[in-house]
Length: 253
Ligand SMILES: NC(=O)c1ccc[n+]([C@@H]2O[C@H](COP(=O)([O-])OP(=O)(O)OC[C@H]3O[C@@H](n4cnc5c(N)ncnc54)[C@H](O)[C@@H]3O)[C@@H](O)[C@H]2O)c1
Image (cartoon, rainbow, N blue to C red; front, top):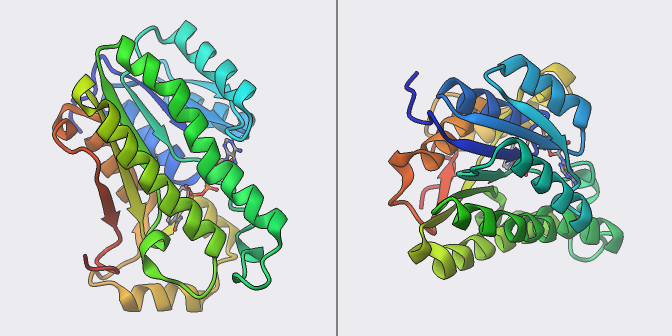
């Protein structure tokens, strides 16, 4: 493991589990001081405590502007220089009710957009002035392969992730010359430690996802964390405005 993030302060939002938790660990292992933010503050605290290295946790609900502002204020008071933000949170509780355009409950659609897209805009508004004050920095968003797959289900989720891609391209275009990079990671099927422990992912999902991949295994949270770390490091400074599909070759573009 390198020390390429030594001296950097990075905020990971949606950090209590899965991809976000793996990213906190990876960033800390590469030398960053990391803040783990999540609506699940107990989970975020456990993640921060497990990585050590000055990592700390703050509560955040990205659907609520007041909560986001409070979280960023807390981050600024403990971490005077913010160099990177990974906006990774998504409300995945409604995904099984995200049926199709004809019968999806509008409350499911609205909640999905409120967290997965509007929430990312709110976080972006809080992040940009702080990154500019640091002389520039990186924003990484977690999108999804669902944005480009054209699936017969999950229309709200796919729309929210396509919206994040558009938001990211706007941020790169508006603030790129000021030293801000903005990129999306679009993961394919990733088995997080929580999904494995929960045992609720039907085997046929795994088999069907694997059959679409050129690589011989499904993704892990660490696979995505490795790409986030690269984008948040000096190695990523000339990558801007991109959607990086990380999926074991499930979707060739
Ligand atoms: N696991 C996959 O196969 C996969 C594939 C493509 C994209 N993604 C994306 O990766 C990201 C992480 O997913 P994951 O699989 O690790 O799931 P996860 O549920 O483990 O992580 C999501 C985190 O977001 C937090 N969160 C939910 N609502 C929030 C809110 N309002 N404010 C703040 N935090 C909130 C949750 O508490 C949780 O810690 C998500 O954006 C998801 O859409 C995952």
